[in-house]
Image 1 (cartoon, rainbow, N blue to C red):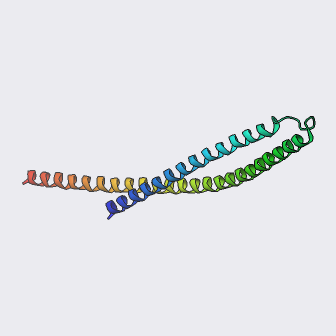
Image 2 (image 1 turned 120 degrees about the vertical axis):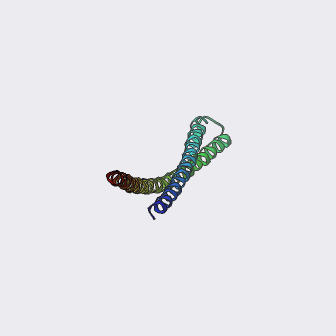
Image 3 (image 1 turned 120 degrees about the horizontal axis):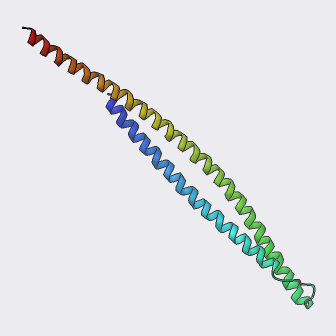
Length: 143
């Protein structure tokens, strides 16, 4: 019975490990996406800051330059909002990863405890068998 319980617990620990690994992979992918967002924001900021002053240009060009800056700034704001949403999603995923990791650790502790109990019971049984054999040999020697 106990050996079956240990096999079941081993399977559960393996499943928890798989879940933790899946969540770690998901977090790594999300971190990569976050880095892309941040690099894109840097590029967009660079685009509208390096486009130059529009006040010295011909009025039509100044209007185009202003519209360009506003469009790029709006896109950067949209990207910032998306980044904040993504970071919030990452926080939720991190919490799920932490919970999965904690569950795996608890299951691993239970498995270790059960293995220890099983090994102790097995050792007691083996000692009892050795003692019984020794007693039988001793009794035979007394005859």
